[in-house]
Amino acid sequence: MRVKILLFALLKDLAHTNRFEVTFTEAPVTIAQVRQAVAQAHPQLEKQMQIAIAACNQEFANPTDHVKDGDEVAFFPPVSGGNLHKPLFTRITTDPVNHDELIRFVTTPATGAVVTFSGVVRGTTTRQEGTLQTDHLEYEAYHEMAEAKMSQVAQEIWERWESVQGVAIVQRIGKLEVGENTVVIACSTGHRGDGGFEAARYGIDRLKEIVPVWKKEVHGNQSNWVIGDYTPTASDNHP
Image 1: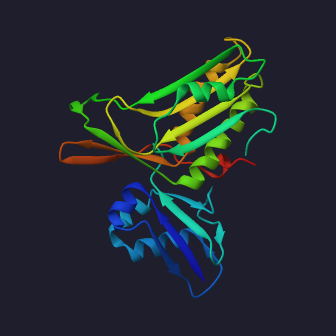
Image 2: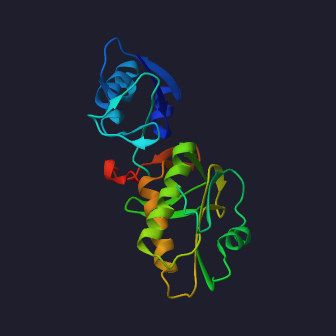
């Protein structure tokens, strides 16, 4: 049986490829066995594969989950469905974000407030080792899964805040300069006290947990992928 492998962010860089296949002569095969096969095919990934997150057919996968012939299994570092009655907009894009368009999209006749979170590329970061100057960021996403998980974030918002009317989530990818917008989350409500602020905050926090998007910081001739510390489990798959 053949299994399609996708690699993202640091794993892709180390392997010098982002897509290949591994072949197994016997079935069944587990995610753990696929992980081992990838490490054997690319020994330089051995250390990273120990902590890499696995997704099978765009859903987070456990080590004991079985894969079938032709399945697509993605590995990536920890990441740094819509409601038919409520507006939902999700997009992965290289284009600048038009905030006014997003606000118009999530606004309904009953809307009296729209809360937006807008992330931008920070040029100066203070860390324990000192002040870091960033030239630009490079964003990468597992596109199909990322948009599906962004829709899941919206569903989770609606489950927690029934008063939230519309949700828009847009993540930019590619090279972004200091001061450029990177991500926007917009939540509309009837009034400013109806949970819009909390929902937007939840949206960006949850995006950084389960939406497979990564960023590379570039400083002069040096660069590094920013790796998160949250490891999704099967419970992070929306039913």
